[in-house]
Structure formats: C-alpha cells, structure tokens
Length: 277
Image: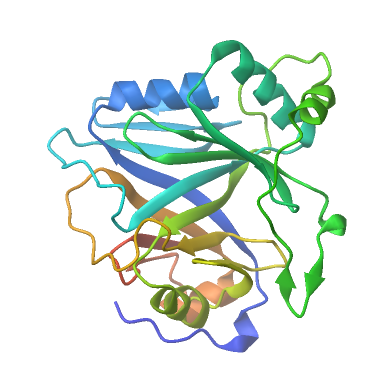
C-alpha cells in the first residue's frame, strides 16, 4: 500500500512498540532460548506458534516454518529486537543470572541514554536487553539526542542488582525498540521519517534513529552489514512483522477513520503493522 506523509498535526500523538514476530525453523529450540537465555515467559505454544512475554503481555511471537530458507546476515531485515527492562536493577539481576548460566552474550555497551547487553538467538536473530538511564540525564541539542557506544560498567550494574534473584522478565518490560538492517539510509528515512512521521533523533555513521514522544529511539536502521541490500524474499527465517502502536489521530491519518490495523512494508519488504494503541 502507498502511504502518504502523515500530517504534522498528528505527529505528537502517542506511539509505542508492540509485539515482534519472527519466522523460525525450529520452534522448540528458539522458544527455549527466549525462555531460558533471555528470560521471557512462555504464554502460549502449539505446534505452529509460540507467544512469549511478561506479565501476560505478548512481546515476541515465534512462527514455525521448517521449510523457510535461512536468512543471510547481509540481507535486509532484523538487526536486533530490544527488550526494555523497567529498571537498572532489573538489568543488573539479568546480568548476574547470565554470569551464572552463560547464555551466548556477544556484547555489552553504555549508550549514554541506556545500558545494554547483546545476544544472538540460535537462528541468528539479534537480541538486546537494556535499561534506560533517567530521561533527565539525556543530552539533546537541536532535536537530536547524544548517543555513543562505550564500555559498560558491569561492576556498577551488578552492584545495582542487590540480593534479589532474577525471576524472568518483570511486569513493565516492553519492546523498547527494533533495530533494522536496510539497503540505504536515504530510502529508510523517507519511509520511517517522512511517511510514518517519526522524528530523526540521532545519526551514527551508517545508522539513523527514529522516535516519537521524546524517546531516544523506537526504530533504528543501519547499513553496517546490508549496504545495497535488495528487497527481501519470502518465505525466510527472521523478522516476520513489527507492530507499532499508534494513537487514534495518527492511525486515522494513515489508515482512515475507524481503522484499527494497517499492514505495510518498508522499501525492503520488512512488514510493519500499525495498530491501535
């Protein structure tokens, strides 16, 4: 579907990330990873799908397709799904748990606005587990927020956890943002900023970050592994769909009055579902 640019009068309404759906070859193995390594709670599972989340809210949907080809690391699609924990202490508790259980951690960073630990799931999908620093400490200039990639102070993070054990994702955990691989930043900015009406909040070399409501980013796009990537071909493993939850005014401006859901695709065929908040 062709989407016209969203009128500026609707750009200040609410926006939050909804569930992320992944297509996987091995449903049991990948679901086990998100339960045991990540800490999501299994809410529902049958032979075709699994839904995982926190406090009864679905954050991740896994869709089984044993015949789907395995997505390549340089294709457009998912860079990582970022799970936002409510507090720094929660991230510290997860880190202590990870030190004991040894999940496949691939990195850890202080981004100034947040602190993050990174994993890769058994089928190559990136995962970020993070906690925000207080918004009052974020530094903004001319509509852009200062972000960086610095070493994570793990000792301080662990100390923040106290003696409370990790018991899986606590209530209040959400999908904080979704980071995508794209073929070109100019086309990504045309879709996510000009058409969907998100603000560009930060630019890294090779990456653009987008948000609403004064957040540091809800969506990010980069070309670090995928410069020049073409449109995705299906069926394949990897990102099946990202939900973005919108306020009524913003959704009506795109989908039409009274519509509760609109399914779109970005220039690389990554599926975006706009749904009523």
